[in-house]
Length: 414
Image (tube, one colour):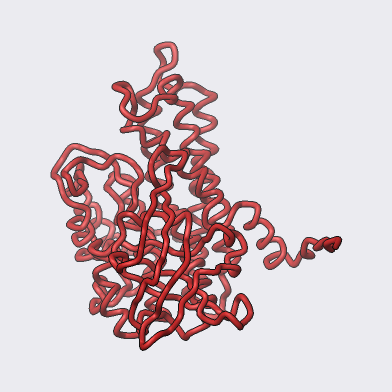
């Protein structure tokens, strides 16, 4: 069996290698000019020595060269190419090897853009996709409520159509990045007399609309990663709806499918594995490099095997999506389940590798890699819960994927 890529892909690989050499050591900066070294609202960025670029600048360079948004049409701000699994694999592998910063992600790029491509109007595609892809418009997700978490369809935030405008009242919680966002895609109950799944609409809300109040919530990373958002007579145009009125649950399920995949990017996992290997080459135990310690090296090899299997499975899921008629929803849930737990394990192992230095946090002068390992370890502990807990994922996989009987419901005693 010949497993060579062939000349077309070998030439493409050389092209990507050349790009990686050109931008080797690039630093991606935040709005204040500081280098980003840990997970943030729009992606995982590795600190390096080299030319400085803003996140939006780097994003546009990647899109222009076809290293991000490859299959999104040019009229919507993408590269306008075909979907090619092998080229995607080459890009991911070379970027991980060169330790180049990944493209921006986040709820707008990873979740809303594919939803609009599938279900949005032409006007919505033209208005939102390009600015979102290019990092000019940040989105947050208005789903969970204080009394509607795992049972999301019980949400009560109300939307009334009055004189050609939606008037929204209610509350959302656990709203990631709301304090930085220009827009929110939000689930609102617009049909109070319909069943709970049938009475929901999917609205697009500008975050500077009068009547919106944002209250940050500090999470276990010690950052305000979440927010409460309150709506008091928030008024938006009638056309700010994706899909039909009362059919928002169908749209939301499309978005949730993309969310589960975006939470566990296998390419980002491989990049972190490479950084872990570098860290093991630096840290020592009794004067010996950690990478030389048999126990630690054995753990590393096991992790590496899991990461490679995870990447291979992601390619299988991608290829299945390209073959119409194949249902990959359950496979996506498996990706989310395995991916979040794998990242948490990987980040935790990195903390073990650093020994007592792994307990440091925030601004300690001896902290390694800007504290990204400690931060991301806690962050992925949260993602094991967020986007559907591991326990919920296992139930869905067993019942819908394996055909196992549903858990019996106990009768309430009145």
